[in-house]
Amino acid sequence: MRKLVFAIILAFTFYIAGMYRHPGLMVLFFAEIALTVVMFLACHYMKRNLSLEIPQKSGVARKEQTIWCALTARNKGKLPVSCFRVRLKVRYPGQRTCRTKRIYGESGCGENLLQFGILARYCGLMQLKVDKLKVYDYLSLFHAGKSIGQEMTIAVFPTESSIETQLWAFLESQGSILPAQAAKGAREDGDEVRQIREYRQGDFVRHIHWNQSARTGQYWVKEYERETNAQVCLWIDLSGQRRAARRQLDAFYELLWSFLVGMLKRDMAVQAFWREEGGK
Image (cartoon, rainbow, N blue to C red; front, side, top):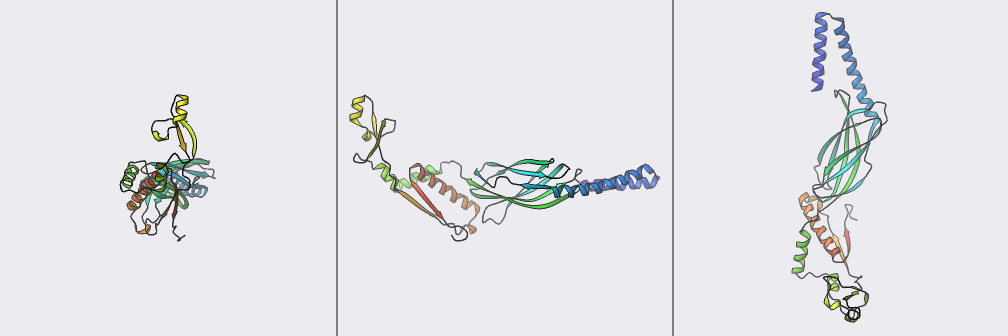
């Protein structure tokens, strides 16, 4: 649109200068032509001297939250850049389509920092790619672009929700008692006592050290050694993830997260194994 308006102004100036044979209007017309050439050359000069880099190659975010990222713009030229546009591509592994985001910025001479926000819609590894850069002249008549290719990987985790409570309530109702749970609930007086501490609300009455409590006048509780050899091995097979929809993988990661967090809260050692894309 600006090019069209500027072209109309050029044509109108040339028409009026030719009709009235006014020297001042002819000088103005040639000045506008010179300005157009200067803006075209300045645009390519600034593009050649401007570079972008992602200082942080990885990050962590929560689902449905905005993660703030940064771009470092380095301008090695003598002219400040009044306006440039960056095209970003956001995608997940195995996803054919990608989400496109465009951000605008400016850069003086030297190094400048540009911040922008990305919404993490799904769980999993979100790949952010700085695809292309477009630099505009001071009148935004011309632009010059180049490819960047900088990438960043963001691990998107589920948010805290009631899924964990519902999942473990279902497992316990089905009688799915894991080794560490059984070990935790089967403490007897014959086990090795690690230490004696003051009674806290929620402690079992059978763990009270009655002799020590009678001598001191307050309740003391025997604390037993924890089971350290109970371990759960989890094998995760994502070989068919390329055919799965993004929402299905998102639901799978939600359940997996709830399962792992529930085991860690119940003092269970967990080892997870998964198959990578190369079959390893």
